[in-house]
Length: 403
Image (tube, rainbow, N blue to C red; front, side):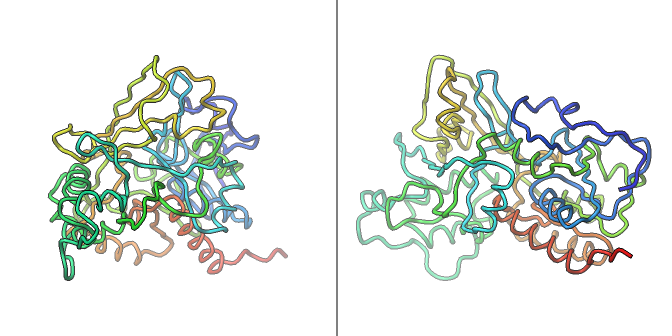
């Protein structure tokens, strides 16, 4: 990488990181005195940008990362409450994968303790399983129930009713989804219903993946370890400073694709979460699990309540007094840093495809990741996608043979 800079550890400029959890070899914060030039410039240090950067660096390529936040890792980040409770800054992150390759990859950068997420829903004054347990449907409807919709679903509501009785849909799904997206369920894509199921058993785990866990030292340490030894320029907005950046071979942009083009075709729609934290110093645990959904609109506008101690390892919580609860409220953010969920409807899918066609026509540019591809990825999906893209780049641009 070519630039007139001085180097210092990123710790010195990142107040959100707590001491004592960082790997010995850190990413480096670049203090700029001139333009940034590198073969591969990667905009964004989340799982997509970080994994591509890691694999290119491991293959001997010249890489620099540009990050407009003060911390690396994108939304895969956590921090400590004053009580010692570890809070996932941008909402709960439950790592799971069925891929041995991806599991081996993440374990390069962190020790994971086993955590198989359990999620409940508050329905009719009771705590019920989510996804919906077979025993609940049997008790509420009977053994010989049938879905309330047949045929080809045209929207999310019909796709949901094709999986369950209408009463169950209205209690567990309709209110939650309309809070989440801020529109009627009939306005949402049928594909959204693929993210949950109706179970034939009472399996309490949210997902059944073979490998599940949370980094023992936290997500902030995990994402920093992925970037170990890779130059990072934080607090740097690429779109406002393009004149300072030159990618000799490729620019990898993982930010919002519509923002890359100055929104000139219109803005893509997103939802985000506003979070309210409450510390209860005299209670150990309040909820039966880390996440309790609140699908009933009459029970308040918040979408779910999180209790973070459930997501910490037993040895970590042993000395912590009290507990921290977080209520999440959905909204439509204007700030790209608050954009968490691409909006699942036809209009935005079509607008994205128009932006995508333009991006693919620009030589030396790869737009990817959750915001770049306008697609919600689970963490393992983001890593798997990034691995595939990195391998394609390495195959297309072999290392130069040294004389």
